[in-house]
Image 1 (cartoon, rainbow, N blue to C red):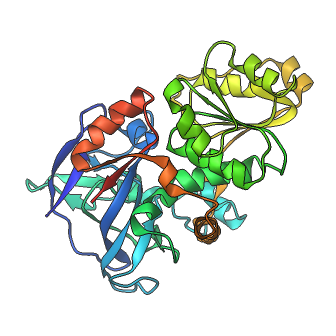
Image 2 (spheres, rainbow, N blue to C red):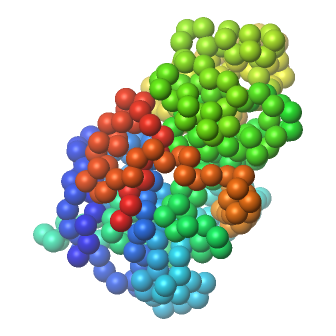
Length: 359
């Protein structure tokens, strides 16, 4: 029996309770969590913006220590530190066959499985495959990756989503070049990782945008050279900062129609707008045909930073060891399992960066 944060139904409050977690079967790994990040995607799962089978144990950004392994697992062993990979590629679907593993059509197949039970026998599903909001979890072997040397285990949890997403948005999706200007909309965990990634890429002017004036110091510590409090004049303010044309690259980390549209309008003619934020189906973004032609901008979605974790984690580890990437900057709150509901409320209110559940 281990403690976990359970989503009993969409729209219901999380329940902190004990669950019956089985030993790993063939091709599975049992992991004792060291830490788990509270991501906006977890909030989106709880409120129904994204759908998962329920009841479920949420949490998809985590790291921990292997407790035991099932038959056939050879790439990790008990005692190894691992990062949880919530979107493992199957290697055989069309997307995987052309190298776009972040779009794997079978990545979330495991979320429909029953992986644990309540004491009364109620089936529980692993939210986004890995169920990281628990003291321990059992996952498919391809959902764990060895923690790179030199990365503290607790900090490594952030590599599982926020850092890969922010880094990939800059380096894989937007392909920021040295000296280019970048605007990052939303200074949460992913936004803070994106700001650091833009600095690592050698961006010149880096503009952070958020509704909260209190986040300016946090944004600047992550690499922002300028800070704009979101308003009806945000796009105009950003164009003024760049001398008129707008930024070369805008990265939207919020997932709201108005923010996506503002990011687009803040981008120079011929520039690139990358959307990382996950919005609901009710968030409709509109463009007219003439402006699409006239502005010549590129608008693209970005899933999991367009990353291949097996390739990108070693790269991120090099940046961490060299001091170019500071994972601690992302974390504004260290909490226990009982603190997750309050962390959700803070996200809704736009407060803080990443809350990290430390076990």
